[in-house]
Structures are given as structure tokens and as C-alpha cells.
Image (cartoon, rainbow, N blue to C red):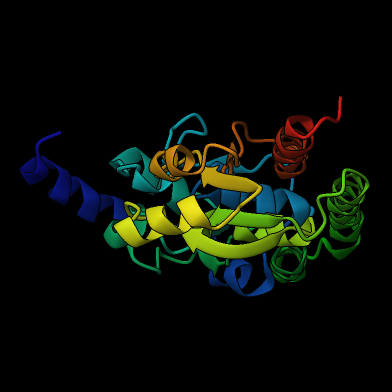
Length: 258
């Protein structure tokens, strides 16, 4: 769409009559409300908060969902919701800002650590009044990571020296790896390549959404190079837990676990 045409349409979308009242904004969504999330990752946090049938703006199949360019119909979709959940790093937020009519805008922190997932799920659940359902879902998520940590320990990998993309350090630490150095999200430097060559790292963990670690893997051929995800490939119940399980299986499988 031509930008000259897009701007007037955007104004109309932002100024349209909101679908929910100010009361809905203050009290959180009811069971019949529509909840929209910016990406599959923020939608996964909503799922862990006990919310079902969460809609998303950026398609889950994108390589780098935060770069999704929002459309007028997307903005209207947000306006027709009672709650919009976002992280703040999405390009779409540069367009829509942090206030869309009377929609309850909920910003969360996104990383897959036990601490952050627990805190953000609780934040959303309190607004949506879904605390009981959320606690059960978060419990399952935590147990998945704890089981992964046990597998890591059984393989003798606890405390293993790891070179990790900055966007993947949280799960690596929860699993018991020693994140001795990080890289990314920008291109690696000559100093980082030299460190990879001499650092005796057992594993290098990159980020599939913006992989930059290939030169490090080349410099450290004895290190196992893995690529993890942060954004689930689908939107639905247990999407984050299933994605984390896949990440864990990549790690344990690379070191001998069937």
C-alpha cells in the first residue's frame, strides 16, 4: 500500500469508535472479550497467564516477527479487542504507540527464564482474573525446564562452558550451563571470534530469528553449535512449553541423549 494512502486510513482506524468501554479497560477482559497479542511469543505468555483463543498480529511463521509491518486491518483488530499484549520491541509499536482507544495495553518483558515467565504470567493473569488457571500452566512450564536441567546434569553438562547469543542466555542459565560469554544480536567482532577460538567452549548457542554465530562455530570446531528459538512456530495452548522442550532436546540430543 502507498504510504500516502496508508496514513489517512491509519488515522481512521485509530480514531474509530472503540468496541469496549472504559470499564472494560480498568477491570480486565471478561470471558467473552477478545485478547490480541503482537506476536506468537507474547501470545504464549498470555496462554501461560490462563487466557485462551488469543489472536496475534504478526504471523507465527515469520523468521523475525518483530519486524512485521502492521496494516490498517491489524489496527482495527486491536481496537476491537479488550486487551492487547506486547513487548515494546516490535516495529508495529512505532506506528500505533502505547494507547489505542480504550483497549487495555499490557506491556510485558519477554525472555524464557522461569523467573520472567512466572512474573509476566502473573501480571497478565491478575488483569484477566485467571490466576488459578495460570498457576497450573506455569507449574507445567517450570517442571519442563527443571526436568531439562536434570537431563543436563545427567549428561555431565551442568556448568559446561557456553558461548550464547544474548537472546538465548535465559534458558541456558536455567538449564545449568555456564554462560561464560555472549554475542549478538549484531554481527560478531574479531575479538569474539578470537575468544571463540581460544575459549574452550563446549557449546555455542545461537538464535534462529537472527543467527550470527556461524563465524564463531567455524573458529571453534570442537564446540557443538546449536540454534534455539524464542518465538513459537504456532499460536495455541502450551506453545512456549513445546518450543522450550524442542530447544532442550536439541541440546541433550547433541550430547548423546536419545
